[in-house]
Image 1 (tube, rainbow, N blue to C red):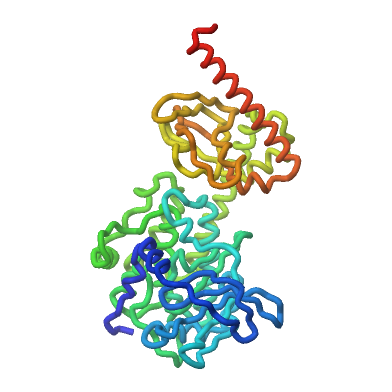
Image 2 (cartoon, one colour):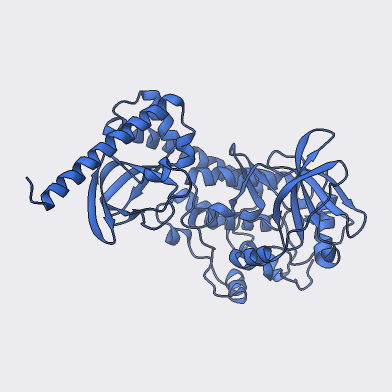
Length: 450
């Protein structure tokens, strides 16, 4: 374990570059595999393709990861062998179950696994796509539970990153891809230096012997990324990143995001300590702090929800809504706070959501010319949700002073109960009528008609 590592620096390649490479690769047809009927392609990686399949014996959907024949030698083959050896071994609600593996020949190397209907956390790792803090903490807590269980089974993951964490539609988290795992007491040849650079611990990069604290560091880096949308360091290339991870403190998370509770800052910073003595000593200690922080956030969220409900109850947009209907809207929306001049909507962008202004006012402009001033109690951007397709925003909307608004996606709007949907339609019509009245008044004023 002390040999010089061979870093998989290609894993730090920008996602856009990876996508270009994948798009350039022609899609091959594949026959059914054993008792599994291939239904569609789920994704294509650098060394393997993943398919959605139906188990004809159980009528259950599964995912099949099939290695390409040209990748059936070297390190990639070893990674496949490691993951295959874990089939039926790791049985935990937060780990993707591995059902079956076949390594008979280069053309028939595959792993059958549980199909997870959801998306990877890569989607929520950029500054403009962050999940709510309480949701992030719950996700990380579930991953920590999975890694704690894996350790008890003699496994260290070694490649914990957002792309390997799946978020199901019901909020349950599934940890995937144990191809880089370190297995204690295993006959399988272990891979040195495997992992994804942005989330690797200093000792992992240095080629030192690893224990569970390396996974703790990686999960701390994931927590950092999901809370800020940034890596723990600033670097222009892989070698600068290696130097910073090994030799320099991480950028304090409070600098990236000043609104985080102190307890969450403390948890993140401790998980990212370079010294093993200063880092969390075990998963029990880490989980204890995660549970405590989640409980505090839940209490704070309940208080915030009540305050937001009170604000909505006084809002003209919701004047015809019943109490239970206001709660339904609140729990299907995302409360947002905007600073002065901060954009809610930008013209010429695709629109997939609208805003209900609860406090303050917003300016509607087109090509920097004022069109309207929307006050609390009205909505903006609703056209994006009332028409099919992916409409282009026709104007920009920016906060005038501090603004509190509810953002509701088109998908959420279509999922409301029938009664809430009817009241939404009426509120939209009322808003449209008011806006037309303002437009007519301005038009008459321009024409010199009082």
